[in-house]
Amino acid sequence: MEDQQIKRVRRTSAEIKHLLEEFSRSGLSAKEFCLQHTITEASFYKWRSRHGYSTSAGGSGFLTLKREPPQPAADTNLFAEVRGIRIYQPVTSSYLKELLS
Image (tube, rainbow, N blue to C red; front, side, top):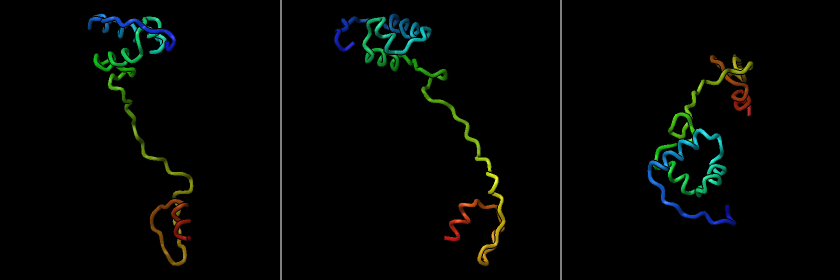
């Protein structure tokens, strides 16, 4: 697209919406779609942001992530007595190493 100039064409809002809907059904990348329809990528992305179209199914452009607490490793349930210090709760091995250093 760099060696060829794309002729500037004014499109109506209805034409732009039609093109954006066609893009969402096409399965093409934005670059491929723009080349096929002689649209600059900058114009395409500007239209998409102005008309509320996004690449994600949710429409916001963000994914919803569910955070789960980490599962304890096999060595986390240690009860230890080190140099006179009594530990009465489960601690990780890295915590014990830190106490010894």
